[in-house]
Length: 287
Image (cartoon, one colour):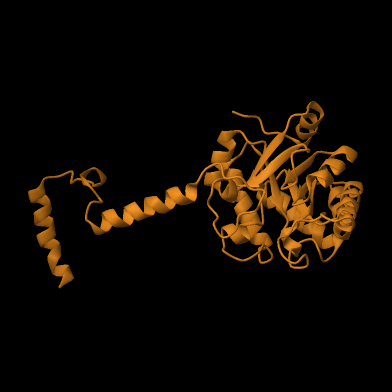
């Protein structure tokens, strides 16, 4: 059995130059696959709003949904470090509200850390949660929860002014106490600079290779989500095509009378004559 990592292991990996690999999943089945594959961490992300529920973004995801999905992931991967994504609105109102929701996440979902999107604007919330004794992962750059204000799912930090803002966010959340930082959708030079300057593990998704590890959505790397594929995602398998073809074959066999075949059927344990008698006895009930 693989021993579950702790936050100190992530720091040791950084010190040793060992890349961390984490994956985003939302259910027990795919969580079990991820654990068997040997990923270092699992993020149960609010991208479930798009992947699982079909919404155009992540904003409608609620605390109840996030916790329920995290519980499923934990059952599927009991020995893997689990990060819960704090959904939009769960940490924006006040520090007290942010701490209360973070505590609920820890107590009900059995997560090892929580992740918040945003930089300077949420630094006070991060500090409050950290002071309450919880591990916080930061997330800056392209932050899906605030994509509307960014004009959509667009890379950040591509101009000097935008890069400055990303760096200021990185400094703000680091000083607020995040234990790790995720950079999404930023130029590799910006990620490399932040990685060089910060002593904490810095991870990337669409931020180049000069960092302490990578994360991808299982739906992207396995070819399951067809509505949108980010530039930074690589398809390592094509479950979408396999699943579609499997369903096409299933429909055809049902309509052609091929399925179920004899090997898919149960047989009577008693004699046929005995059951014929039973059927005759029961027939009047259908009149």
